[in-house]
Length: 327
Image (cartoon, rainbow, N blue to C red):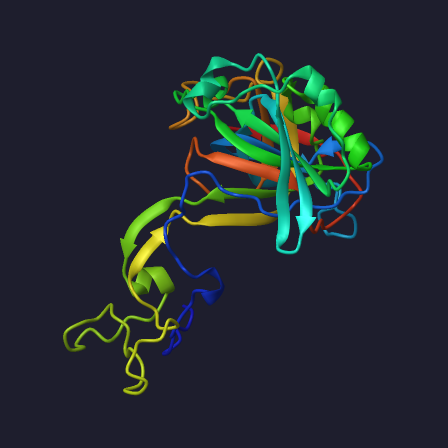
């Protein structure tokens, strides 16, 4: 049996304060990486968490004991319906950071967007007169509809996606050609690449300090309480410091995980991995999907945002060899 420490003041990090509920069920990506590419490309995508599975792949990590051998891994399936580029947003760099310069919106957008926001399309004549002087950064305004992934929600998610590669003029022409069109996951990422995954975690509700912060329980004959913190701090200053582990909200926080490797990018029409009866709490997988190694944050059906790895482990992209998928 392992030895339990007699003292455990806190086993949670203060770096994640405040441990409050996220403002929205949709996570925010505030930073986009700089990629070394000649041609412009989108730097992110979005999908919906579908299920956890196991798969067997050939270990392609050189200088490891299992190199070249079958390796079983836990993985996560993410349904990735096509992403519609509905607009372009330009930013200029000011004293206090980026500031919106102008917006361009496509014409003939689907009617589901009216459930989220009212958009007035930009006329073609004014689109040709736009000048890029002072533009520091361009981003694509995209929409993802859960109904396209087989879910019940009709209202789409609308957010911005960074654009990398080339100069500002090349990025603008690239986005202009994509305006009003659908982008698939295979147009953005390739198998073997590393991505950062951003999502809102599962909500657990109100929890005590033992569960929330991992403090040690007091002895069973302790007076008044057993699962409470031993001390709230000194008598002076006459306040409880923020570092004291207290009860409160646990879960439903925004979290971002670095370097999740993409093991598969496929379509359910070509390679269907849905088990008989469908995935638990999700149903039948429809359209495009990806499989990433390991677990990710969030409940089933929750929106998950992907971006190019901002601090990748390896630069060389090797497509994984999948032996078997165990759903």
